[in-house]
Image (cartoon, rainbow, N blue to C red; front, side, top):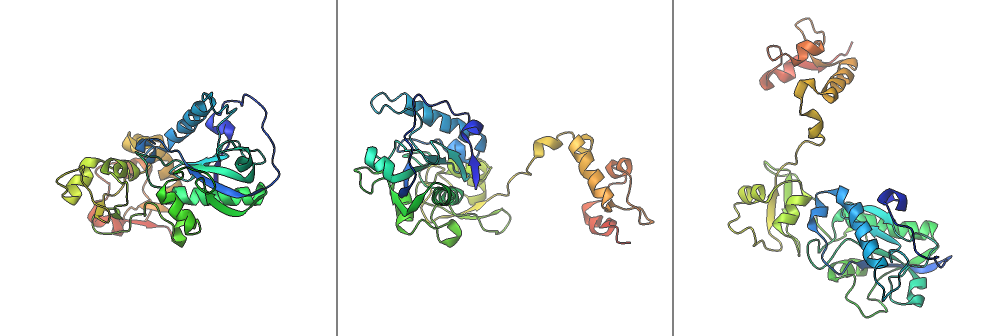
Length: 300
């Protein structure tokens, strides 16, 4: 479970005292019911700020009189579980005082536009939050939607369908965006889901709309069909910003030192691992066609 504490996401202090609860019948799942920016899909760093925005909006709502963010927990598209009011405290999101005391309230970062369907990681995080409430917060076995017992569309049809299927983890048949499977020249194949847009998919898979259009021969970027299979280009090298200096990068030097200490690296004719200076020399650097013959790990 990737739990993000209130301190870690920069929560404001509540303006009043929480009502305590020792147990609940279970957990109710919510969605935001408003636009959720799809830029969150490609940048997890934005998620904490989004939770702060939810909290600020709730605390500014004079008609509700909320003293804090209304939810017990909020789950982002990357599967992190952000602590809202947390365990042992009555939430303010289920509709009235009795409903708030009856179930914890866990909200997914899904809305009416932008991010309109849960990702697999988000579903995994929702299950983490549910199990956390059950194991540590006295929650019973019920997993319900906000609309159960209250007149609302929340948590939306996709999430509600997942709840009706038993709220499974994705590997056990959950809904949401499927992970790409290896295929061809790209990173994989993705099947378009309801609510998907090319811009959202580009953010999710760390690519661009232009790359998706070119790779898939799409004539109209605003028109993709549910069930359509898209080739997803391979993602960029993680941590690439640390290697902008090439062989002179301190990260590259440290990586080489670790490899050399373990006996890995390009070798001289006598079988010795080359020095750092020789390794990074263009004249002595092995070509791709000879790499397998000149690289290796010391075995004796």
